[in-house]
Image (cartoon, rainbow, N blue to C red; front, side, top):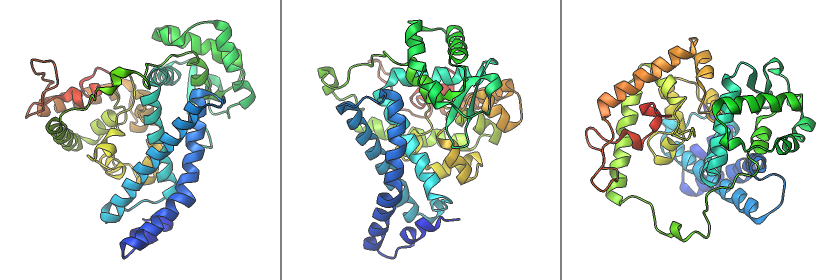
Length: 361
């Protein structure tokens, strides 16, 4: 089923009409949505303080999301099998959230790592809870508050509470992080927006140098032939993933993350290996539902177990079985004498795809 907003673009009979309809979709619908989503997400990173870096980040993230969306829409026009987008707004929001999350991970890796750790703690500790609100945002707090709406006034107290404690959350062990989260939730006294907790906990983080660092002038990009080999290997892995039993596919892909805990499923559309709709098809999740789920990925094992109707340990077992089958079919990592990743062959470099596939996440 195709959203009526998209019909005139997808069914345009010439390039000029298609370009006009695409510009209308972007300018009238997608761009205002991107400005709202990106502005809200980046404020949780840098706070409400004005500054050139924040403005630059915002424009970059909006630009990234629009480029990704245009690419996906062009693919839908060129291949009608990809054109079944039931809600253009929901689809656009999923793409924008994905692009924004990628931008934040790239520019603020330490904060992204802490956010992933906090999400795990709030999702798995029996004293805490993390839930989605009626406006499709994440709230958190003590377990007995689950389902309540977050309190904006309470959230404003979070930075002062964290500052008074005088501790660096990035140095905590898992148990210390859980204890600190429980202490903070009890002190604030009400449910709050999860991003507000992340913003407070990550205050004071100094990210690795980027701009102005001469060492970044040397390009880390792989040689062209190596890039082609890795692209082919990604396609091979994706083909083998699509042949896994459904429950193994769900346990693996919905939790797919790198060694720092960041999600990796967004790489597949960017690399041209699979569209968001094709990923939804492999997971046998309806497009509209998957568009809403996309912004929450990677899911923790508790959420996946609820979806599959099984225990958390069974989810772990399913993922282990999936990893074992993939390793048997596409191989273990190999390295050349200089220490660089060798172009993958029949038993190529599985680490290049994700440490999660090998169980290191």
